[in-house]
Length: 278
Image 1: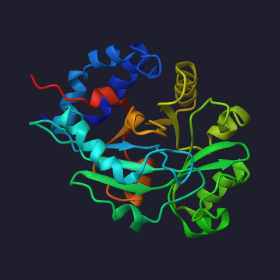
Image 2: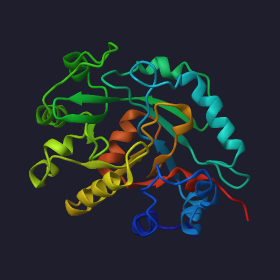
Image 3: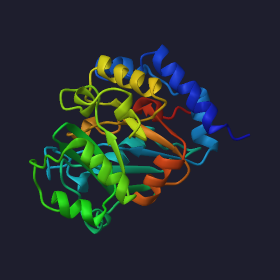
Image 4: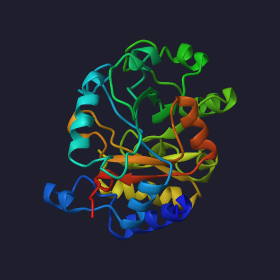
């Protein structure tokens, strides 16, 4: 019998707090190796129609060191270690490339060779005057207004105005990145008024200290917001430290935007995507 995605989500998010899985930075290598996927989560991966999405990664087109052409080989190496795939299951994987203030042309990412079940999609992390914002979308007006087709690290639109622009155009989703880091928009625009403009918050970030991830979780819970997770990887070894599981397929940025608005999803620790066969 296929497990209920919503029931698994609620149970996982409860245990996330109990076991402090939001503390990815202080878990040592041995501790991570000893982590095993909760059986109820493994049942969902095995029998549900689940897609794992790396929501936050950076390449040399901004301040990262991850060459997109190498992600396929790195991911294949993880497959051999039991991540995302086993003899009994194969979890489709999407990598969102979210460079600072730059959006890859879709055809550039599509030209990268990779095997079935792995997809690369472009989005961006916008450096607003009030903090960093993950923007999933590529509306021509936003790309043109912020010059996102050019490599840069200087765009500084007004934070609330950027959220209003995304909402008015109705094409894309804007999500505060890595609360409550020094470059977080929630440091300058906290509270219920700003929360009312949000669909979701990045509550698990692979570069963020545990106390700040926990503060983001508490903010999302207080204001009834969904949470996503991503590695914020700038180097290959950090990729997939956190991912977000979606109920259903994600093949395009439009699929992701629709799922963020209307679908069901929750973030998980990357070690819980390492499959152990009984």
